[in-house]
Length: 247
Image (cartoon, rainbow, N blue to C red):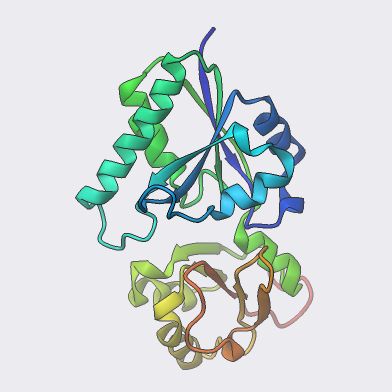
């Protein structure tokens, strides 16, 4: 029987936002891997993916994989070492007889997810393992729903980018005709707001901080303060002057 590794998107953090398929795949898996920060044994707190799926699975079904999730240095030795160790742990589970394996990841496994790096490395170690994904609700979808701001209408484009890519990319997107969503604003938040103000796009922009978690916040971006959490989502809606104006 061929082994299968499924990357399961579990949404931004609210257990109620898991899809029926996601819950089924997680419950049917022989082992469910979850990402955690690469800290000394016993020091790493449960990650967001783990706490999100906890209501659906007993803790003994979960296995933590350490990743350099807070490394901002690109493809560093620390990051590559974590990728390799995680893939080896999955390969070992396959060698030990596991055939249905799952990896829970916040959001969607095909949108800025650690799962892609794990899957690529596992394919090199065990080419016979089938890799699949289950889509998850993204933070930008949750923010659009919570704020009542449509992501795109008619002929509007939708641009999703990480704020870590730099201000120039963000500024170019904001200058365009569509909606812009920026992830991971964090320390760049003040300069993102300054750019929105410069282009006259700040008034309708909204920010979601800690979406899906206790104490999360959704509101005008201009009122969010200067230090939102790393996993924050900035939504800048397209300019709309009338109903159906972009059809």
